[in-house]
Amino acid sequence: MSNILTIAMPKGRIFEEAVELLRKAGYKLPPEFDDSRKLIIDVAEEGLRFILSKPMDVATYVEHGVADVGIAGKDVLLEEERDVYELLDLKISHCYLAVAGLPDTKMNEVAPRVATKYPNVAEAYFREQGEQVEIIKLNGSIELAPLIGLSDRIVDIVSTGRTLKENGLIEYERIIDVTSRFIVNPVSYRIKDLQIDEMVERLSKVV
Image (cartoon, rainbow, N blue to C red; front, side):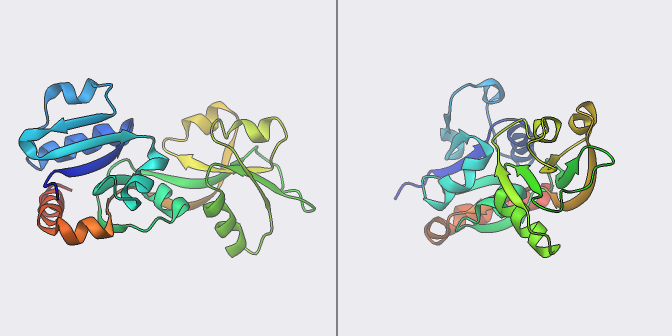
């Protein structure tokens, strides 16, 4: 069994904040790490291998064991419901999931429709509210749905609220706060527990 620890990380904002956190925790990551376009990056001196992927795929890589650990948003973990352990709230990439739509509009009482890339989260939320809705899954530009009459509401990630505002939408309900979490493959945690516990301990000190 390799003693290299493989970490799945999402590209973009979470990656940048996570790299900064790892450096604060004492991991020596090369400067070119930040600008690399590679999808797999080895940092041999630290015994680490990084897999860079889309945010929604991180938990999948960890669940299937191609990555030992990963950093994923709570939104992804709620939506994907993967078989992974969530060991630490890294308290980075703060945002939240919200229900939004055009101002001064009511939900269609006959066949209310909600567009989102989080169908499981959205369905669970509206079920808890006692509302039966039709979920329309979209992969991007969720804000477009109410503007073209595809849906009454959207469920999406909100960071600053700027995108909603620029598209003439308002927030109706806040569902849950989201931060990035350190997740682990259950089998890896048994085999590489010392390495993983060390990483968790070092990160805990700088979170």
